[in-house]
Length: 195
Image (cartoon, rainbow, N blue to C red; front, side, top):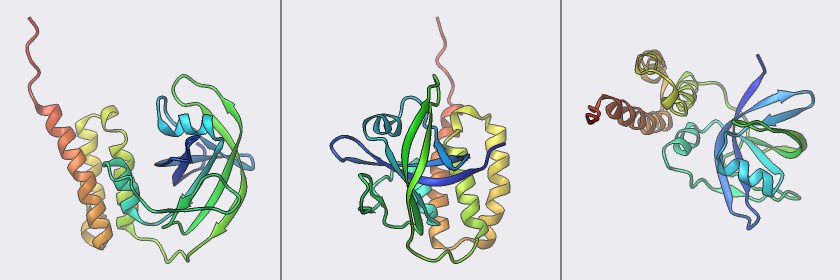
């Protein structure tokens, strides 16, 4: 299995409009693979402007927010790059697309790191933040998983929230759980009879 780093990816269109998306980037040789699903704004933007910035942040609200319609997070310009980074990034990497392996579902963009910078210290691990990240990944796959799997994962992850969460983790968890609750409620609605 490949090494995957969970990041917030920023891309831009030809007009400079920024798109922010949580995305796991895949380590390959001396670079990273960005593999957005078809269709997606990230995919369109990489075709238009072949650069992305991977922002490394420990703010769980950004991951949760991007998956629950809260995508307006502050960005700041990166000197010498056409794409900004997250203002909340502890560090970032500017990635330049060098080649693309086409795929009907997830084209793989091989990117070289052209610039990296650290902005703030990493102050340690927190189980609740890890649980929020795992729930965010689960939410991104709600349509692919059976409700039993979703409920079992949430039962396990909620232990870390109950024991170690601060206000940011609780807020992010709440956003994601509303999305899960809505999804599960939709699955339980009776389907109209076909006639």
